[in-house]
Image (cartoon, rainbow, N blue to C red; front, top):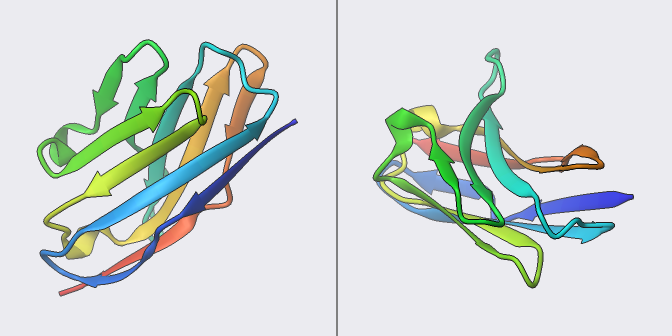
Length: 115
C-alpha cells in the first residue's frame, strides 16, 4: 500500500509564497511520477505540475514562472514552491503518485490566498 501525506498549506496574502511538501511511503517503485493537482471550489481538479523520477517535468502553462516542482527520489518526496500567489490559486492541493502498480492520491492541503 502507498500513502501520501501533504503539508505546507495555509493562508497567505496575494503576492506571497508558500511551499508544499508531499511524502510518499509504502511500496514505491523506482520509476514513478509525482504530481500536484489542485481543485478550486466548484471547479474540477486540474494538474499543476508533474515530475518523474527521470526528471521529465510538466507544468500547467498558466503557472509557468510562478510555480516550481522538485523532488527527492531517495526520500520519495515532492515539493511545490509557489510564488507571487494570486487569489485564483486558492484551492485544495493534492499530491498524486503514478507508478506501474497504480495511481495514489493524498488527502490534500488547503491553500487560501486573500486579495
